[in-house]
Image (cartoon, rainbow, N blue to C red; front, side):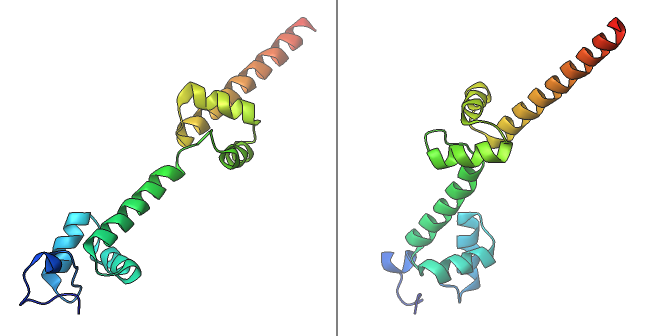
Length: 131
């Protein structure tokens, strides 16, 4: 059993009792997650509050990390180069210009494409005027 109301020491405080609604509410609020996510985490890693907290920290880290481009990792460079349809060198230049956020890098390439389209349009217009 994960919790005993007769035991009130440190060992009891370190465990999450899903059978007690007030504990589910407390730990959900503490970890800033829904009760369903708390229950899933306890099922996955056990009743230890430290293990559950570590699990949620890891999940948040993974979510934040997905949106960042790690230029130091070759597999990331390959992935993002293929995704944005650019060379690794252009990807590295873009990251140096706007930072590691994939959204900012995507916006950078979109702006570059827009500028290139405008230049093509201007060149075509200039050629037509010369003719």
